[in-house]
Length: 213
Image (cartoon, rainbow, N blue to C red; front, side):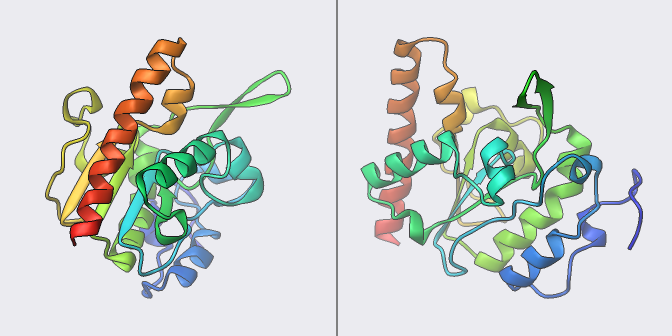
């Protein structure tokens, strides 16, 4: 197995198969960047291979790192509530992250999220592209700027393009919106309420698109 260097990425560990179970098994052995060294485990995507929509976050959080499953912490709980509110069944969607290992910095006894670098995102991108290719969704939803930039490039801005359907090579429709954790971290109740309303409105667009497909 190749040792990590700036020339190594997840592409060096990808199997030929595009079966999600086989991809997940291979991802557990990935050494395409340094993040695996401090993470508890790889957190691969989860959901049915026939899902019509793929939700992409930035990276696993503390709880996801411990459980080995995506979107099971506070942000995942908010996502579940809003999906139910707009009529999208969580069991019918595929959820994953742009980066598969938890990047963190210590703060006393806590492990706080640290944003992945551009090199780490690039190294991990082959896993994300393989997941999307395996599922072939009608729609991709990027939760947060990092997830959107992982697919659309560093020039993408949530502040300018949030809630817009785009045609991409990844799926017939791609929409970027807030990450639930950004809503939870909003500085005051008024900001949280405004962001949550916009988040719900964005996911209603997705729900309507799926109902017409």
